Image 1: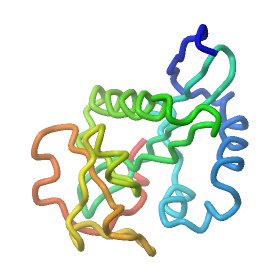
Image 2 (image 1 turned 180 degrees about the horizontal axis):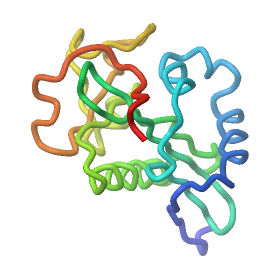
Image 3 (image 1 turned 90 degrees about the vertical axis):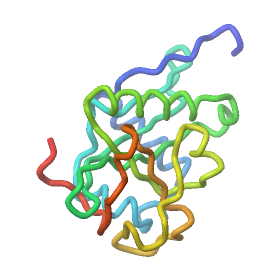
Image 4 (image 1 turned 45 degrees about the vertical axis):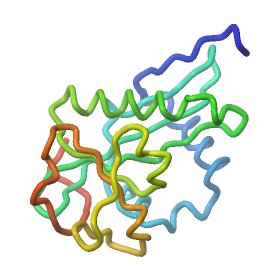
Length: 169
């Protein structure tokens, strides 16, 4: 595979079925019980801020961003980020993350939140949210609730529940 280049492309409606199969393979049926999935099931992800990774014509990864609010503050919820298992640890996840954050910043977004491991997501600027500052509507390990400021200081003073933003579009 070393002669094939990785390409990061905007997700299209035609990618939905392949992405769903990828989520099934990598996360299994238990994914629907996770708090972040519960938030996302109530809103559509932003197609213009969601991306797929391909090697040749093979889809090997996907990342999505969905509109949320933290209290009264608009933000984006990142996820799911998933890579086909044989293609992990090759920089594909980081490339998808960087493209998603760049796209969000270019469209004027200021904050992105997610539930994940700080050592992994910290490589692209995510930091742990202090306990109790932002609250998910279900069980989440507070050490895994992370935020990336796309504009310096954007998280200053932000507090409240994280919930779907039905006004975004």
